Image (cartoon, rainbow, N blue to C red; front, side):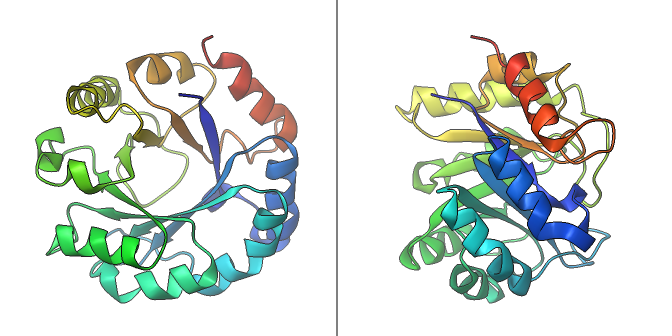
Length: 224
């Protein structure tokens, strides 16, 4: 399974968001990752459907994926709006969906890929009853809410357990996305544990190097 890089616009310069999205895509990002926060489930308020709709033409022109991560209470209320705005993937949290099976099926019925997310303190076993229904999984390697946090070291073992769960069910094709604190120095261990999508925010959008150079550094760190 090839490794994909998802550039998280949470860390982008919103005064020039369109340019930054284009820079990430030109630099080789496979996904544009959109963190939607409601100020309730997580202590931050971020992006709505209008932003997704605005960047959709740029992402579509590059044949890339619009990856929407709903860190919100009652995600069912917002799913249709983000589908209409152009989301290709919608990922919801185990911790917020009262009827997770219904929510996953609802996303699929609207014609997009459905994913499920786990916070760092939520056991991998919480996915046992839903794993067969999902198109992708997302492991939070920081506590959600703010960018720029450090990778939680125990996340690597969690990724490995999830990969084992998927492989044991003949679901090797299902991606494991990892979000939080990823940089060239820890890419190898994350990939070797079983991840196949790296969500990178501050390691892509920062002032120490260009977006293209930052993505190239992440690619170089991916083990062969």
